[in-house]
Image (cartoon, rainbow, N blue to C red; front, side, top):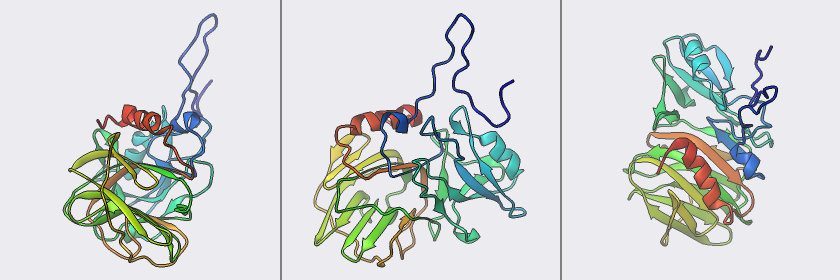
Length: 280
């Protein structure tokens, strides 16, 4: 008998085939240094997607996957008509860079009055626009070739940050949306550099492949940008907020970060993400 917490992508039938085995994004495009998602990204990943806190009594529970997607049934049952907030967004890369928020008032929300929050019909994590954020020990190495992929939605009315990472005072990285409604990638090693592309409200898949390659929905764009230099010299990454500033409401569904250039794989990675989320 199958079950009891285990998922089987394929059950072979005698004399026949069966369902095709599950192949995740990280099965096809391996090597991610950190990967956070509300879908399963690898057939070998056996952990949970998130850990949530129920507002009514502050009880917590890990939420995993069913058929390679977030187990929303378990999530709504646990929420029991109340709100639920994410305390941990588990890293599916195998690196152990779990994104954490232990302070209840800073935890992003995933269930409102018993209903799972969604973006384009898929579950999402909402940040409150004031001070919600996750902290991860992963550091984006801006001195090397790297590539980050984001699935999100936000408004374009004020500066807010999707992710910010600092390795040293002269080795910084940030991705955000600036006050004139442009996605902005900012990288600093010895000098300031940056790039930006225009953004409109709605769900977006953003590929950020070193400087100056920025793609919105698989289309390249970019122009001269500036770096927000207000970072503290600390060795970690914030998701959903700059190190010292508030941001407007933003919904996140997936962030996958590679430590090496992914120019050759960018279209394939974007296609995999889009096939699941239906963004463009």
